[in-house]
Image (tube, rainbow, N blue to C red; front, side, top):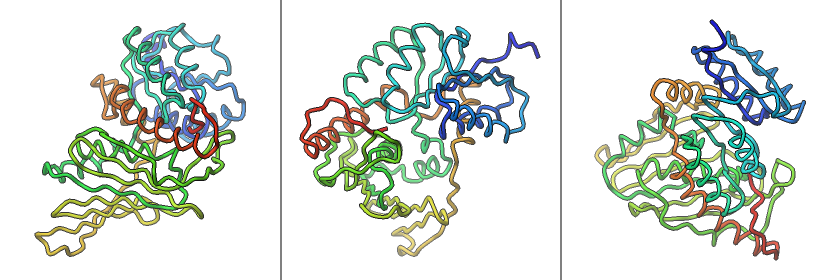
Amino acid sequence: MDSAIKRRTLIIGAGQLGSRHLQGLLKVNSPMDVFVLDPSDESLQVARQRAGEIEHTHDIHFYSTWEALPAEFELVIVATNADVREMIINRLLESHQVKYLILEKVLFQEIAAYYRISVLLEKYHILTWVNHSRRMFDVYSQLKNEMNDGKPKVYQVTGGNWGLGCNGLHFIDLFTFLSSSKVLTLDTDWVDNALLQSKRKGFAEFTGTIKGLLTDNSVFQVTSFPGDMTALTITVFNGDSRYIIQESGTPQIYVLKKDKGFSVEKKEFTMEFQSALTTKLVISLFEKGTCDLPVYKEACHSHELFIRRLLETYNNVTGLSQTILPIT
């Protein structure tokens, strides 16, 4: 098929996550010109290797500089670290036309960046979503429908050293999705008074508990214990039902309901990985012009609260007065 009618897509950031996005793109049937941009030869090599694991008929172009890229893209996925994401978006939109934009989280490390990018996206009329991918899991969509009783719930996440700063927002977003609500308050009083070295150089990590209240009066606690990394468990409670969700190890959901005497019922949990989710995401965008991820404005609400509170903790622990929270 002539390349002029192929859809142009771009992935910025070709590391571990970006290369999984690439695999997902390559499994889409619509013919594409796929561009991958990363200044690191090592990251580009990872992307090449993982692209080679997928049978496809798309054209792939790997570049380390912006100058080689075309001027227009139907879809761009920004899978860089948070510290450079604002700069990348500015660079992208000043010289390229973009229809759909997908951003990885944590979005930005500075509160002011959320507003600056919001203005930019509105200026260029870019349809933008944030990759809180659990919203796309079939099992969580089914759970949301099953729990649609209007009652406030108690949400908990517990595990050992799983990355509270890096991954906490994924679960907070999941709770807002399941409750069809927003975060009303969020505090970090129970976050530990110590910082960990993130697995990504130059970034900090936290342990302890983040807690909050949703607008439907549901409450949540997200806990990462210090020490060894252990599998996490998600629990959801209301007056009549208990759901205990084990995503790793042997994925399983344990359901206990009042009308069944709280006897334990096991349900299968299918973990959906990014390479498969990206395929679903891109097909939805190409066919419907939308997807199941939260739009930028919706995601910003939780992100800004999260960054603001953790930044207070970070400054208290370090004795600094920074406006930048070094998480990604």
